[in-house]
Amino acid sequence: MANIAKDITNGNLDGLDLKIFEPDDSFGTKKAEADWLIKVGITQALSDSKLLEHLVVPGAVRADTSVIFKIFLEQVVTSSHLIIIENYIFNSNDAVNYPVFFVNCIRKFIPALDQITFIYTDDNRYINNPIKVQFDALIKAIKSTIIIEYKQTNLFHDRFILGGPHGKGLIVGASFNALGNKYSVIDYLQPPDNEDLYIELGNHGLI
Image (cartoon, rainbow, N blue to C red; front, side, top):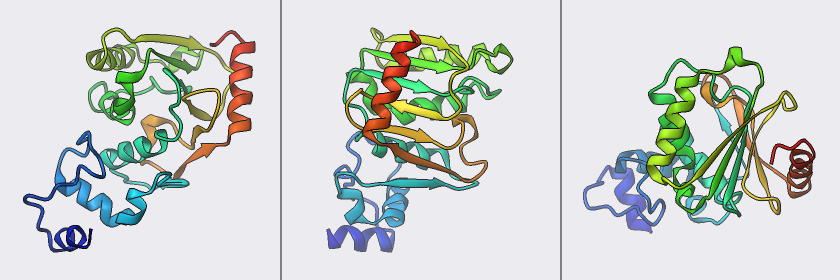
């Protein structure tokens, strides 16, 4: 481990095997992963729960943010049904980079999912249908048999990712399309609150 730290510090990345930290190679380059390891520290990168919360700062690189989401979601996705509650998830004019960013946040988990449910605003002014089409296409390119469900409501203000009724959820302090514009927090939703959300979703016919 000391040799890895030394090689990273000295910029000697040729031949450096970092898959112990991210086996699916989602960083894209060894430099991106090395930069991330320098930020968080190797001990924390190897820990099971890795992050308790994360502050997304203005100018945050989307590739880095998607890695952070994957670390959080390791503790959240406990079922085959992922629920994303985000009013403005389809409110973007960037039909190329933004959908790729979002799908990269959940890419690691898609093969094991049977269903993804998007719950978002019922105000159609904030829905860009080409974005929805891109989300759908990118997700089904990873797993063609997955069910993608779209539900509209005005019940929610905050943004949540729920990966199962028993355990933690995730709460996100900004819309996905705005992450990196202003300071915002990614944090865990504790099990009792996560369970309450599932009850309310059921009561309103959203799941």
